[in-house]
Length: 559
Image (tube, rainbow, N blue to C red; front, top):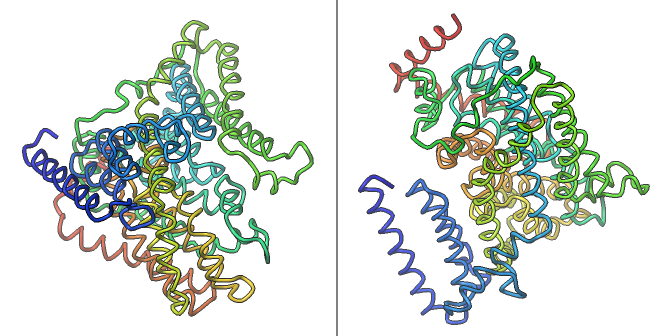
């Protein structure tokens, strides 16, 4: 907020927000529960974050706005709502969300991952992987595609995906001068979208639990919607296309230009993880196994932890265990075992001394303080919006009389779900609101194809809004995994995501009429590639000098 214009814009925004709150108090003396104004708090947080480029105060003011509305502007009750920890309307505040069992499990998981990443850095694993990758991966396209491939392989959970892929691929992308914003985008684009396409994932389990299984099992319903989930599929198509054809546009072009030509991976002065990328060689001779083995153990143990919480070892089938799994607890259990293994492994390898290894505990925690703080505010904001202000009831009322628009409803559901997820920062919460409505509007016994397309639209919209939102936990984790300043990640990712949204909307518009998934999917993929080629032609012509400099820098790096 150093610029005078930014300060003025921020001040004007605050005045407008205060004026809105005064008007709401006068017009809705009984409160705004279940109305469109229930989405005001996340709108405040998002608008202020985009204006100020500062996420902490923006989230704080968003939570404060939500607390005011929930308490109906009563000062003391506003404080109680904000802090939380009580019952009823006081159960949506900070203490309640931080103390929630699921959230605590995720926070522990984040800290353990931070410790493991620091331990692998100190033990020389990250440096060894960087040396191997520099010899193996010969181009920027290869580095981006390797990041995507690793993201696809780690499909069990989006949090796990973001932080693991980030820690492994930072040295690789850094050696090829790929900006942190681009790395964050690729990580984010292969986190939630991949999990939503994987039948064996925490996301599949969540969606399966949201749908009506009167006619078909929840998991089978999830599998049926995959070919129609255009946003998730086209996001992967986009990564492949822009990587192979070297397509960049919007703010991302500036970040990539600075990375390639000016050797500046960050573009802005913000360094949220300063010093964390100073990879060490370790006291012994480090090898690529020092990074890969702990990551493999982490993946295996997290899968075992998840199916354990789902009752697999009590006789449940693998798929049923995943459907009933407590992902937060499973990830927490698996990561604890993996952390113990990593400590012992490095001691036996003599890659790091006993004393130095425990320096990773506070160091890893410190690296995660920023995303943890943002997550706590984001969870509180989402809880206030959904439970405290009844955004779900507002959506239900909005779609209550839309039966006569059956074939057009999937695109409406997709766009509406995107808006809700963007505003609330939660895809799971959005799908939890929308999936039951979809199953009611499109009864599977009467409209089986439309029910599947509608569920796909709901899931795609949830991922889309979550992907774009600056208050989304997955977006926050992608920034943390890439060691990218969060606002930079959001600003550079948004034009790419909007491109996919537009093409996906076309798919959800034509799918109810064609009802042949393979034909619709083929049309969508061709359209996505065609749109990107048109964008490349326009941007290349407009910024010919920039692209020429980037091409020379890339050729110089290869040489």
